[in-house]
Length: 150
Image (cartoon, rainbow, N blue to C red; front, side, top):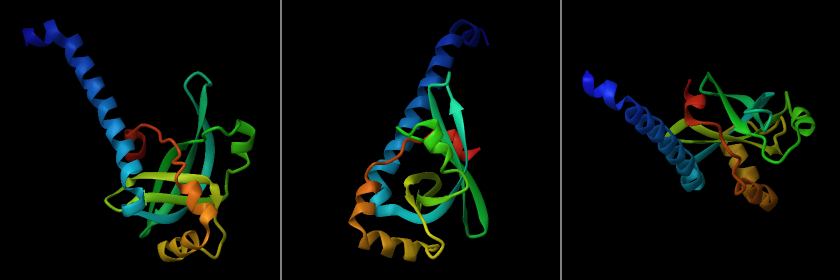
């Protein structure tokens, strides 16, 4: 017990450092494996929410897989707030990892029509359109990994 009192600041620093390191690994896993392991679905942007001290904004979006609804977030990138807000309540491409559905991104620069719903339909559509394939390589930033799990 005395050890914890004496070294608590070091323990806290190690825990926080570990969380940030794991977050980095979470982001890298998506970047390194979305082409091989990524599956496609559609998601609806629900809102644009600010973070920090007004320094940035993120999309809050939902998507449904096998009857289960997931809620996630993703950075708006270089879009202004007014442009990002125009994307609310519209459907866009979502890529998630087959091994971890919580590791996902919404591609707000790839709008999806009503006719494309399944992974197979979306994959076929993406393979036919080189411009869309190119957009997938500009991976949107994600929030911290724990935001997508809880």
